[in-house]
Length: 270
Image (cartoon, rainbow, N blue to C red; front, side, top):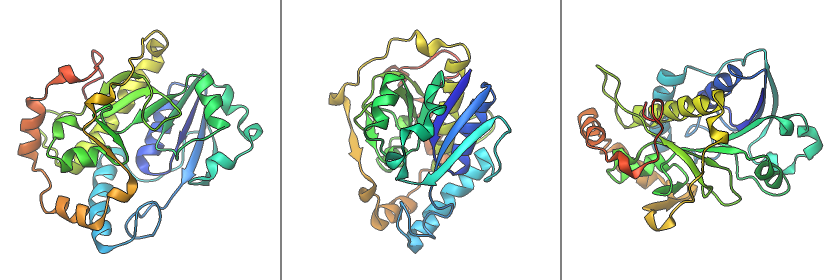
């Protein structure tokens, strides 16, 4: 089985490539590159002292969960490009990748025609870091924490759609405290990424995803839709001043109403 992933270049994205490569004969990784130092270098997120501090915490949590940047396994074939270049590629350059049995999108830029049409026809799967339809758009798990709702932190595995995060849902994946540990808000977000990876790989290994009946999203349940421009220095400062403590998160997770989510038995809650 060959697997293709459209993703980015941070340690969590590389970890997904590694996980997919572990169950694939060949993994094709289409990597969109942005800075490895958000907040310090002007890129998708602005450069400022506040952003430097905020993303310092993000990177610390990411390294704890996924390690640092590194080379990929031998069965991974890669194409790298600047973030946003994806829609300018000649599709012939991607021909072998577009023929894979499984195609996954995680953390890629917004995909437009003609590539989106090919991916939709191939039944591509998207990992949305946020629990749709409740939180949609950009930095969703940050906004759930900002809103004082750690119980909404997680991931949605859904069919890719032309609209942002609007595809029919296969399942959700939710983080939880492992025995004997406490998670702050930054660590909780990264644990949600791990939950998403575990769930997706489980679905691919036993091919359950092919038999699942995707459920259309009920947009009437939406709590917040955010764009990158909403994440300002002021918002980041407010959050840093009141990052939820591990005890607060633990209590929120232990009382979480899982009936709001579409969970699998086993890996859906990690």
